[in-house]
Image 1 (tube, one colour):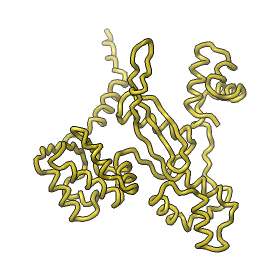
Image 2 (image 1 turned 180 degrees about the horizontal axis):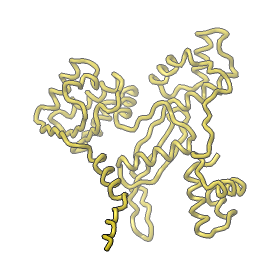
Image 3 (image 1 turned 135 degrees about the horizontal axis):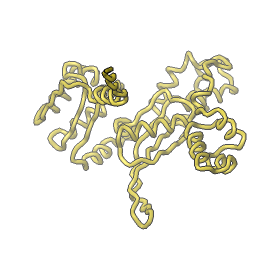
Image 4 (image 1 turned 180 degrees about the vertical axis):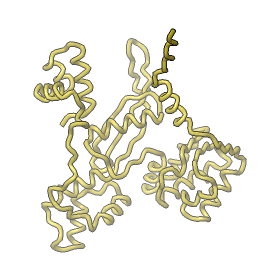
Length: 302
């Protein structure tokens, strides 16, 4: 199976008047596959038939909530360990031959990603230091990884890196996290949360963008509250959110924690309420207008 990225590279190489065999080798596919997509002139994502059926029934659908609960407590659990536990709890219901099915489901369960600064490696191009980052995507159970070169920790870099990783993976994990909350949660489970928060105290300011946009569970919000409490009167925090304070209980899950969090945030703070139209919608409107050809006035007949 080839990815859209490989086919784009193949087409680019063919446009450079390189032979089909050389282009196929450089794009990482055999000659027959290269010929097929050259003739089709379309990407794999366009011509691929959607596989929306199961070749066999899902044997773990009834116990999957329990599996997710165990993985949430310990993401390093192996599928074999989970299967053995299920066999003890449900004698005769699960066979050893179903291990591969469980492994595939656990593999797809969750992915995580983050940016890694690579400048410290000392890579140079033409004698000049090459300052860059790597977007790193990993499935936490199987350690399957994908990387994309980028230059800023922007939303565009995140979108491109995630898209490339999912195309290469050939599927979408049920859950994906790419924020410091997951790092703090892992640190809490490993009894090193104070050390992790101390590391973040080295930054003059922390930016929490779109707080409340993605719903977090209670355990995740507990470590976030701990972070905010430790930053109180010690370091700056910049927060953006589409939710008014009256709805922040949706974020912190209970009224007491919500009140305590807001109390610490508004003290010494500057609050900017922006009731403005979306700049993305405005840019899209302008782009549409610019793409529309101007009408030429009809000539005045004489």
